[in-house]
Image 1 (cartoon, rainbow, N blue to C red):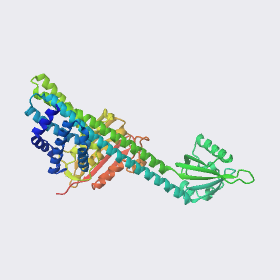
Image 2: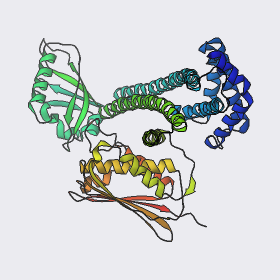
Image 3: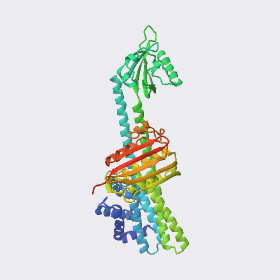
Image 4: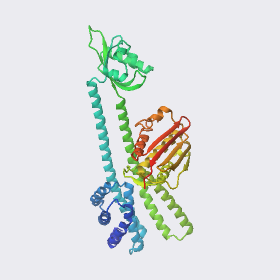
Length: 499
């Protein structure tokens, strides 16, 4: 069979190359030059022939490195590259059906071609994933380095006495209090000296027992104790701290007190949580790319075989069922494509366009969320909005962020209303939900980075902050109205392009 495949590829090499190249022009329009597209097609066919003759897939490694370098420059995803190979498959299939070789069964020959292309593409996928993992490791090391620098920064603060340094005598009264302690806890030296050491303890038996253990360790000449815990400021705020305790020099063999150094650990904890979240999201992104690839390849083969059966079958019932299968395959492909498009790194190039399709795409993406089963979407969108200058994928991110927050606020039950309108200067998009709403304090902070009302691990607090920055970049505005138990309304304003 490999001999027949080699014979076919060599016999119709030029015709297949032209057919494949023509199919790629619409897909790679403005991304690659005609010469680059032809070079890719010809090198691919040459590699197919060489692998078919030798059955050695390692001979394709240099070719894979070359095309990865080419496609990475234009930021093509694995799924998009898979589509390029699929077009090549269709180009070869055309000549199998049009000019069948003697002593060959087209379906068997197609299966051999599918296996060859799949094996080559699988090696490309491994190269792609290995490279991305190395990039991920680099980002992880960069974040770890940033965290280490912050730790060093905290040490420098400690040595320059900007951290809280205090002393407690054997009667558990404060006898020393520096400026760093004043900055952290809000108490002046006058307010603290002579007060009990329990002044900084939050409420709860846990902290009383913790203080007793610290006292016992210091009296029994234990080594310096470092403890991660919480303390209370003058304003009543509970902060994360790292506490270091050492016993003061003994006089006449008696315990006279201890020194305490406290560092505000709140920022460190936030950075640590940010790195953990970044690594989790990166792993999820890698898994999503793999799942999309594993779904896309079988779908392409199934779709092709369905089309072959449609051409050959004369049975009406069978043709109706094949049409139904093809429609469902196309639906699954559309879902995968929308998810991959949304996860692709955003483009910063703006274009003049009607954003109605962007709004509908955002609703379409959110409807795949499991929380929308009892949610109703009411849309009142103008059919011909004036044009605005935006980057569609970034604006899509804004709409999806707001819709996801609405789903969270409604807890999967209620109505989300979307409305678009315009006047002489601007277009307006309103997204309104009937969820739990927000109080005045929360409303003032929703666009702050890392501010979130969600439970730990369920939100980064970056969605609305990023959305605010995107809308401002497009010279627009985003405003929010909300009341507790009455829902929220986000109004996005974008300027109309003149002329």
